Length: 196
Image (tube, rainbow, N blue to C red; front, side, top):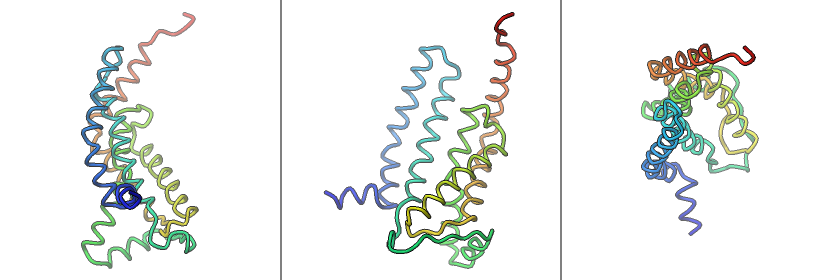
């Protein structure tokens, strides 16, 4: 049984399978949240529900995967690379398939956060804010990898690629979050002022 659980929660393949298997549950969660919001009169029920579930469903499994320990976890000290673009150039010199996997993987780490957060939270409806949020989250992950001695390199290039991926995803969802930011600011202007 322990080997079975390790496969599902302790390997890239297992986490990927669990993520795909959880897709119907994520869809059900969107539907249930939207129905709940619709019954209470909250607007827009579907967009908010999809954004909330999308942030969690798209971010948690990827962060889980990058926090999986390497083969020598705990036995080797944490490694840090603070020179920008050095690791990226090393990756680009590697085999094309490996380089593509590393770069695309790093771009996707906080892409769901970048795509859905501006749709849900009007305060995050700007690319610089999403870049700052993703960079902050990425720094936390890199520090955790170092402190927990997971046999991974904590690299500034990972932070740059994670933030860039979130920024690109935010730009991809811009047509939806701009409307959210405008609607929120309109609601604030039209709200009655207390004491008048």
